[in-house]
Length: 489
Image (cartoon, rainbow, N blue to C red; front, side):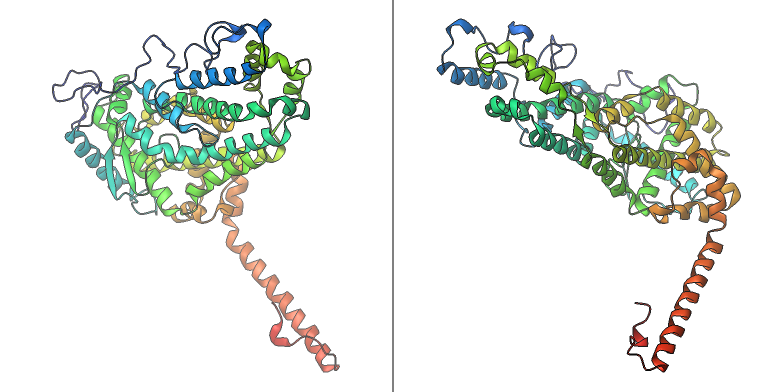
């Protein structure tokens, strides 16, 4: 769009006071895929014994001293992967690799101008006023900021660590505890290296996902997770400008619409105290049940002579390459955890959609069109969905978001704002996936909630009265029954 208001500048407009950040980019150069290790192999090994990794290695002249030489060459190989690539590997995920790779994928970016910081604050402030009529939750925004893609990457990394660590730690633990004895016998000296390479593999996947995501997210809550500190509303002007270029709606309406979505998310995460942690704990529930089918590695090592691994580096390379392709098995408990996570994310997005529609529908003519644009953007399987699928095996289904939005709409029509927002008071009150498929049943339970509670209290009082009567009768008969003052404990 060329009419972006509030000081937002359209991407690539050549504004003199907006210079592209080209310093310290660590560009991949001849590696168009952005893979810091070179080629399509993320670990830098040359498959089939060709090329880099071990140098000239003649298996016919093997002797025990060559084991030390091989590890020395492995060390040299890791050292040559680039500055910082061998760091940050102390845990199950090499976050230094993830950060460096994501930073390379971001490339040059546009610094934030003072007018964009002011513009972001103005848009959120206006949207926040309108949101007051659409929800009982008061404003949760204490500060509005504008981020570059790199700032988004840096500020969100702690949250990604919270999501990735449980999964990666459980995978590493399962690997070590269940490695077949036949493989462990000769793989012992290599386990440390395999652990490092596993961390690199996970870090590479994370970096690729976040690098792409950083260039496309429009706000800090664009993917449904709270990636900014509590109370902070964030807009990303460069991505918003690119997003607006392909739309027919006025730029001013686009920015206020996105600001309203961000402010609504912040309200929800600020005033529903359990929500942020619930998202992370659900991932941990999934991670605790991870197991790996080791039949693949058993088959891979069944016909390998341990001495072959030392005399023929290509065998070792093949084993490492095949081991990275093993998929964890999914248990019923994990499927249930992923279902809860998917439903919770859908409920968050559906609630925000309804609140923003109610707040802006009569004020911004393009609200309906922009809402549908966001739906199509999500349905196209963008980097957010790909990142979730890579990290936790979760694919966000747009059907669930659409149904969640419909459920919140029908709840409001059948009750009021207070009842609708009161559903967030406790996680046990939230709809589940079955309720998304049958909102009428959920609404019926919601409408009869008070009656059911009164019935439960009356039944409890009746039971206590009957118990008191029995104990009193025992006391009159001279039995050494319990002290009546202790009943009901």
